Length: 382
Ligand SMILES: [Zn+2]
Image (cartoon, rainbow, N blue to C red; front, side, top):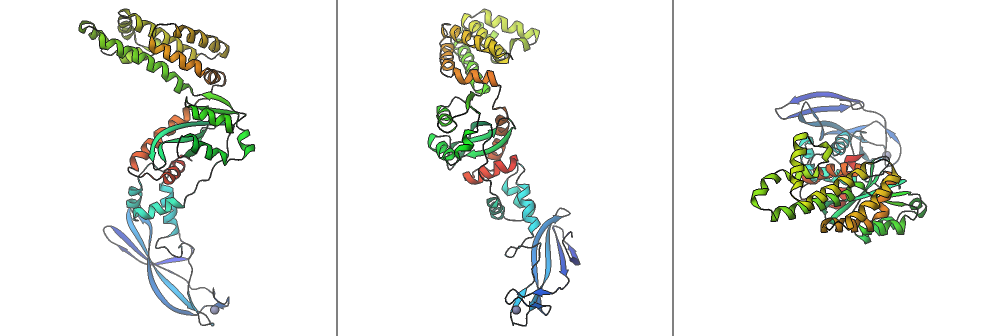
């Protein structure tokens, strides 16, 4: 049984369950009322407990529970280390349930596997408590659409160096962010050297107020997207006004235009060339996109800094509204973008967690309790 001092009297195998009758040897007991020692048995009663499934069947332990009687006249039940006092399941079953919740599976399926109710599993999840972690040197923040009872967007804090999830915040608004960081000790906040975020102003305000020693870095993925969106919008604008005869060349245009030119196969390069040949705006846009990607992929910061400003100035005068807008955004966020080039930290690992969160959201469909959602995400991540 792998239970201390327990021996099996009988095992009953049914189709869907196993019932194991167990007993323990009598020992000298200390009376909980007067402290005297006794080994006088008063009576026995049978009690049934759920245990870990055995041979894929729901398993019940039927324990012959012993009651003692003391010279003081009081009666008391023997204690068993594998059983909690008020629950009808073994401790190891509870631990196993908590352990199973680390997998990306629904509470309902854990309940079914372990022969307990959904509310039992939920209660066990609620006993898991992850406290606020200490802040790392490189702190990264990102958000995801969690749709919990605390708001539409939840924030995820990660250690950008160790690629570890730190915490989930209830909402990305200024007030929630402030109240979270306000509760962290000053000395700890001052230790943060880098803060990686996207182009959401409250994050920057937060860093300035609470992380005064942190260099603010805009995550690469988040600012590159602006170039991708710009060229996508150029393509859409042009395709709308295009004469039908030309449209056939633009069939797979989205993928051809967005892929790095040098990564295209020869035949696709030709198809791409042909598309760009017909349209000045798209050709310019494509040139700007390729140029910006090249800047991002370069390793040398001094080159990246100079080229970044060349690019912004060129895009601002390009005559293509989508890129003029993009350049304006880059100019506003230039400090954080250049820091991304300089220090090379990204939100990369956070994006990985987002997939895990997506799965958790799907399997906990309809569960909007933020606290539980937070526990579950952290529980599944560490
Ligand atoms: Zn007693």
